[in-house]
Length: 242
Length: 300
Ligand SMILES: Nc1ncnc2c1ncn2[C@@H]1O[C@H](COP(=O)(O)OP(=O)(O)OP(=O)(O)O)[C@@H](O)[C@H]1O
Ligand SMILES: [Mg+2]
Image 1 (spheres, protein in one colour):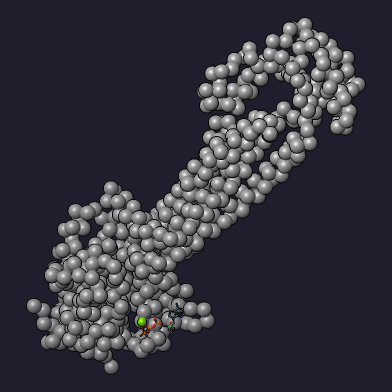
Image 2: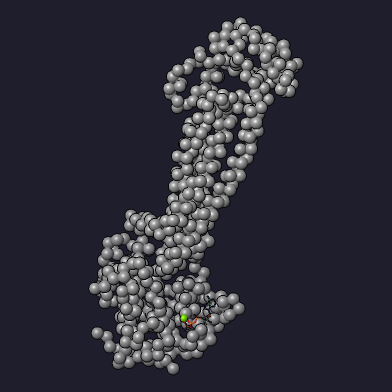
């Protein structure tokens, strides 16, 4: 069992090459400028926690990384590729390398837990024998083997978030993007989710997470990027919420 | 690959099932428009066939007896040649063989009827275009042939036939407009059904995009759904067309008091052509509707 959150001691580990680079990114929504020049990079296997007040641009920043949004100005590179100029038919192949989880889980209500996870593999054309083997394995990893035939509305919030993590991770992405993954959870459940994300990070997956959760930031002591009004106002490794 | 296809078909099936009422309505609109279109084409074909011999200003036809002597034919032709340029503007001879082939074309498929006839039993005829098309003058001229040896009967293009011919052109114009209207109505119907199908699945679509389903993978189930509506609609229209052909057109041609409309039939070839046209238009409409729907509402 991994206790590093409680101990407050981040594991020392060697990080790889930058896997995400943003260069002078500005984003306007009509007249409103949400991002005002974001230049930063994230290394392979790193965990980056993005904090900042509501409306500071955290979600917008995260959405740039899987091409849900395009910057108005500036460059975004993922795994060495310029993703801003990526033609739209290639975007799905980018996204197969990026898992996403959200505050509201976004599970399909009419499918069981196992079917929700399998869906992510089915729609990218994975063969049935691969699906049959990987879905139980990932449900085991997130601790939901027993509940694989439950419907999402029969699960607690924490369990639903685990299903959504399983779905995001079942395809073994390079990067996991998490936008307020614990936003709807009580503190104890949130800690469980953070442990799970930490385990996923240890398999080599880079994690970029936006959060409001002070407790998590302070106990994780990972790199913190703080946004305010569309700008980076702090970038600190082993940072705290303040 | 097999798994992919099975998944896509299962998705399509689910889409249709969830959206069954609208899909059904859409199929009915397509079927109704295509039936209308096909039926007006069939009627136009029937009118064409029935009035073919009256085309080009032909005002009356002199039918000879099937067993008329060659000398009797020569006598009529001499008479016609003398009058040419005077009372008669133009005329042409329709031989037994030509009559027979016209007949077999009309009644193709009706083996029972065709078995009872042969080239020998067909009457040869002269189709005549008079110079003066005034009804009285035409009748006076025509009756002079009635008493000639070897003549069986003289048939006049009556007002009814002229009216039918006039209407035929109106029908074909109406057909064109019905065609345009149906393409628009059916396309909009399919488009609307698909937009609702897409809206009702936006959660699935969003997840599919996030996990990296290819654009085609997202589009295909909706495109198949649209195609099903167009093609099934067309197939539903076909029995309706067969009904129009058999019961309306052919009953009409057999009714006694409408002897004028003899030959008011649709040949197998014409029926096949109209059926294929209906299927082609159904497919075209579905293709257009599907492509517009996925490119407008799917945003992938
Ligand atoms: N699609 C959009 N159209 C217009 N404005 C937008 C859009 N998306 C975001 N914004 C604006 O950009 C700003 C940053 O939004 P963003 O969602 O990135 O904030 P956030 O830091 O994630 O906030 P929160 O903590 O509330 O989630 C906000 O003012 C928001 O209103
Ligand atoms: Mg946000």
